[in-house]
Image 1 (cartoon, rainbow, N blue to C red):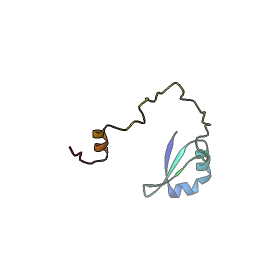
Image 2: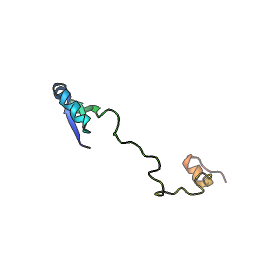
Image 3: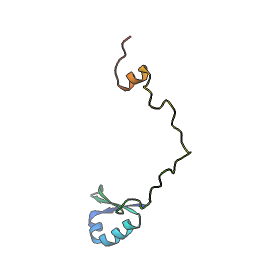
Image 4: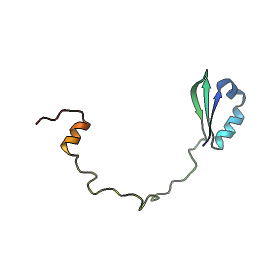
Length: 84
């Protein structure tokens, strides 16, 4: 998806064309004094319908996925010192 940066003044004068470009999938960044302020994008997301089960057979979740972490790893993640 293409992205264009446009000055606020120029964007005001070309709003209709910018909306058409955004509707076709282009992202327009509107900036003021070179600082990005807003993004003009197509309304309604990507337009793709999600298909449930599309990843079936492509990934595997380990049997122990929900098991507690080892104490040492848990302590390091919680940033606490383990007492012996």
